[in-house]
Image (tube, rainbow, N blue to C red; front, side):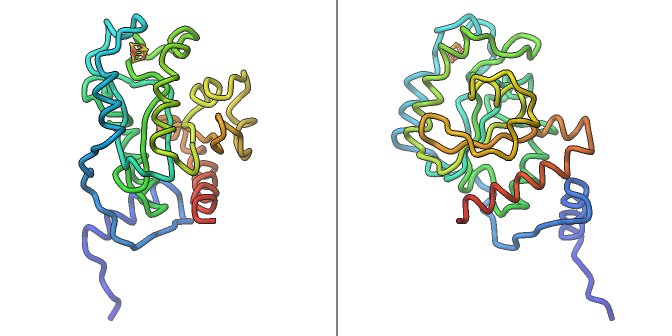
Length: 221
Ligand code: SF4
């Protein structure tokens, strides 16, 4: 008789297959799904800057979106700025794109609360999700630099073209920023697709999975 998978296991495998196609990588280690209570310097820094009004986005935001995850993470994921759902919840990468990102992290044996920290370059939402302006980046990027100083990640991964261009100060297509280990103020940085782009274009799932295998290997080396 064939062994039968439980329903949750079957659902999980289907989700991973939906994301990555037939080549799936499973890490069967237990992943703690619960957020750890963040304390210490990172939380103190959060409290210090959460009322920021250094640029006009401070007036239009609903919530300041500092970041979420493990304060000792080896992997730091950075998007460009909060979107509508993030602005309402005060947490980066929620909604469908956030769910997809969580599935990708699971497939490399991590989660947003375990050995990963997630944040954005801007901590407040630009109106209508427009790209960050240079002046906003200039005001807000020091917060990201301080987060990096406190977390000390082994690798930064920027998610999406705009985040990559903003951090690297280049005007290049995402394709030409991928597959390179860049340097961001002394920390290695890789660029891959934003999970929202994968929701719009199925064909990006395979190259994204290739990137995350490289990310996994870099972190485990
Ligand atoms: S986007 Fe950054 S600099 Fe502008 S108000 Fe928000 S936290 Fe301050």
